[in-house]
Image (cartoon, one colour):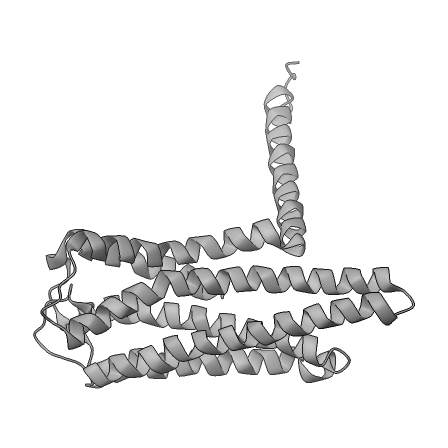
Length: 270
């Protein structure tokens, strides 16, 4: 998901340019590169979030078999599959001919084929999002039940309570990310569908720009949420920061020492 968000932040740079200068891209290949890169990156972000949620789902439902079911090799295979699917479902079809010709690049809804847009909306957007909602509803319900059961029937309730409290916090973090992703992307997708089916209803440039920037912020918010709510992420970030700080201080100290005490055959100047 981090890679997908990084790619999206890069892909959105020309998108911002097109927002303020619609004639910035005036050929079909450049137009396809512009929009396909954004849709591909956003699709991978949603699918990666779905995989993270399914991983958490398996850990909660099958805690004793989790390490046997979810191995590093299986995780790499799943990651490869979703990236291959994202490329073949978003990028490949327009470049092999499933597109519209001679259109204004700023008008996203007119660049892609209408059936392709509906496919991406259902299978790469709405479908994964609804699946995430169902998964989190079930996981929250299950974790609360186990948390309550551990407090009543286990010998060491405090230990069990701590485990399920931590699990609940992790779920809350991912749920917030899911919620913000839905709030960021669903309005823009709805606007695209309105442009397709109700061309007489035209949103103003201000509304389009605001919705576009809201989708751009999604990739910014994800790492911030992880940093604020994930203890493991915070500790890793702190450790990396202190290591980098110590390295900078050490280099500055060495540089200062070399200036004050030059390593030459001549006389040193204190």
